[in-house]
Image 1 (tube, one colour):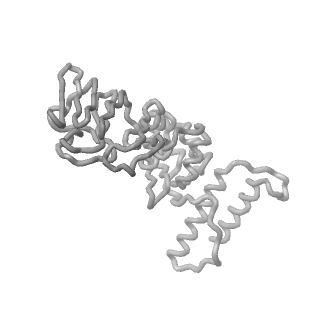
Image 2 (cartoon, rainbow, N blue to C red):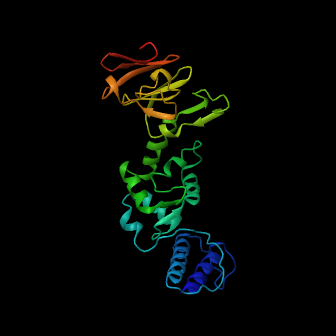
Length: 271
């Protein structure tokens, strides 16, 4: 079975790359190829689990998807454009797709994106450093939340909502960056404004939430301690709990916010 699946996948690869064949046909649809690559991988795993001996070393498949058989894109992915995207790129029954191939497919489909925005989808789509595969089921859920894959992607990484930072917001003179770097922890938030203090920064979202990060001395970050933070965290404690803000400002060692009701809140040195 392993050799049979391998031979079939090889034949489709020949057709897909327009190498000569008996019929002079050109085969451009990559979906069956991806599916057979999955079949080959699964049969190989099954043979190994049963103690079967492989017929020698084999080349790494061009498509490294894994689980096959339990998921069907036609049934699982309700959004039609998302379903067609998956089937065309990876095959109807490919339960998983390698992250690098998925990322390239996104750029091919939607065009070049701001640095780091495509990578922001890794976690929502189930891909991790230890298991770098996008799950079909995760894509279906991701797309359903916003009425389609593209809409969900825009909601997560719309350039109008992306924040870049450079330099450092703590005492590490050798740290930070001399060029703008995407602030990953703010992806997906509708950022209304950004304010920078001497050693910390604050962001106000369209929903009235305040996020701070940087040096935490004097309690200037508003998280109830003096801990320095490398990434933004929402200010949720104290008098600001449940309060929607309309403005935020940073001093050298303190922060102030004005609520939508006109109340002034301050924290940090000299509060």
